[in-house]
Image (cartoon, rainbow, N blue to C red; front, side, top):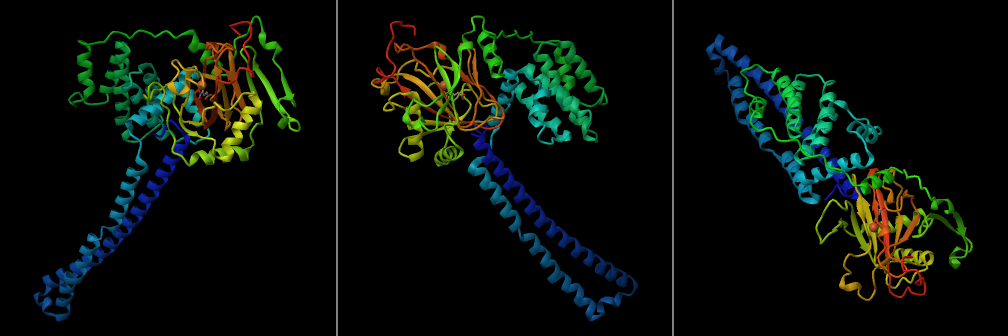
Length: 495
Ligand SMILES: O=C(O)CCC(=O)C(=O)O
Ligand SMILES: [Fe+2]
């Protein structure tokens, strides 16, 4: 699967590059073959014409031994060359092999992937409140997009959203496609506009807007002569009988509103302003390793504590982690009962502590968190793709798996940001009105459990969709067993 990870997308980029160069190569060889044929046939044509002319003028022409020879020679030698030329399908075979290989490994994306990518775009629009136009502007201003093909991409997105029954979104993209198409000339533009209009009409119908649908269909049909059979005519006729009812507007939860706002880096003002006492400070004393190079701490939230630590990893360490984890095949996140859902759109690998680099990261987490690392899970390294996200969730278990009966639940999450993210990709805590912007080399940590080890539902958090860039994180979850002296109970069971 490609779309859920930027790393996999790079592989796809290479595939496209190779297909392009194989096609170029094939075209060049093919062209050479055609050129040879062309010059051969031109030569034969002249000779043949001369022969015929001579024959008409004096029949004994072919009596001349040389002329007779030339005709025979052409038929024996030259035409044989042609048929040899045609038989030499070598270029074509090579081309076919290359294409076949590309299709077999790593494999081309399928319809499902296309839908996954489109859903990612839709998610971005939804969370960041972007119109189709704004998304195109924001994401493609760095790429010199060619408007003569941009309309087609917008159209394709509209069609996919229509197929996914996301009609409001489909409408926006189809309208954008149709307005972009106005700037395209050429004989095909009309035909293409008709396709866009047909989908536009179907979308209006699905949205229960009959008048608009009729308008669009009539406009479309006005481009053709009344006798031309066109599916639009059929749609128009059938509209009388089966106009679906307007779909119900879905109302969005307050939690989603919080999530979306925080993803955009906006906090609600806090009346009792607990955030005033938040500090940034240099910590020399937390662990001997910080004596000479203090830990840069930013308190993000107090009670429950969320802290961000900057410059914990340098680029060399991050590269080493990525190199180490690249040796393993990443896979799409399985969330609920091994079913792939849109809850988590990313790919990840697990890394144990046998390698030097991963072990040293665990040591850092131990030094910063003060927790015993015996019961830490292996490190999970994740990469998010187009619109990649992790919807709001808890890191603690709804039902503790048997393998953690002794180790306990996930008391603390320790997350390294292994990349910056150009736009989006914040980590947000909707119940605490908190957002954290990814900063390469930083570590953020928080508690998922109360001191009493009861699950703390204020720890609800999410990874916002990535708008631009590639987001990488590394997670180490620490479990609750043997931490009683490191984070003791208090007298208040809610603390
Ligand atoms: O990507 C993020 O910012 C959050 C990831 C997360 O919550 C997780 O992996 O459990
Ligand atoms: Fe999480």
